[in-house]
Length: 347
Image 1 (tube, rainbow, N blue to C red):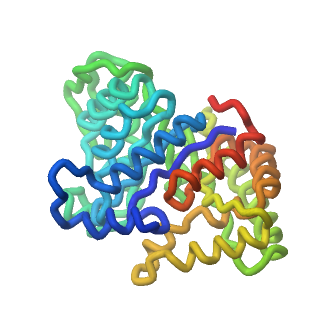
Image 2: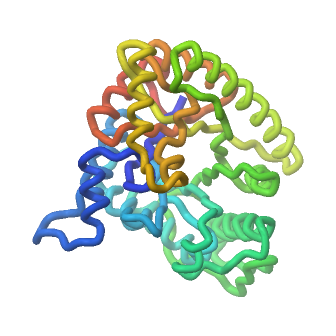
């Protein structure tokens, strides 16, 4: 099993005091010579994940939130790392694919051969409108744009010069002026709609499998029943994606987005997860859902329970777990120690 870190950002994870300082201070000046506390936290958490052998660090993009911009943050953190892939989130509707290809090649030279992309097709119309995105006529057009975006980047990585004539993009003589350190980056995405699943089957390397709507927080027995329901849902969704990807003669790899909460006993972990959920943004239900997303993956319990559940995901064909944790280095270290006995070697 591989592991990735969901790098803490104010809109993306449950707050600690350090993250609250970053959110509050985002609109104010910083003292001379002092870096943003959100950057310091992101750097320290990513370095810890790198030391623990994690496969990737995902930098979410929340353009309208008090979060540092994902590409800037990812590039700033990258030089502090040695092995981990650096994965900024990208909205295809906000970045021209040729520009994005050069940005990716640049990142791939800063973190040699270690770039990756979290492809986000977007749900927040105001974010697109404010930052210059082109409005989509419907969901279908949004996914066509994303497919073309990935195809163009892959062609730029493979050829000195390209022409592309698509439904959304037309490129007469595109080129990539710098060479990346490695090949094309792996593309991750989490689309759920029928159009989105078709996009995944056509162009994604990794899919964050849809899972679990059960209530993990009402007690230990309910936690176990919810996990069994989640496994059934993951099994069904992987089977569906296998059928879709077969149409395009491709293989998609499977990942899970999980919020890890470990304690001495399952009951203590459930109580702790309930407390963390109560700290999510009470004024914005959508943001609160994002901050606690992954809780329904069921990695809530004692170390033995979490190790067993990871092994069961692995049996289903899940190869990577994207971990959210309470954004503190020690919290990540504790969870990493918990999962290390499941798969001591990361690659």
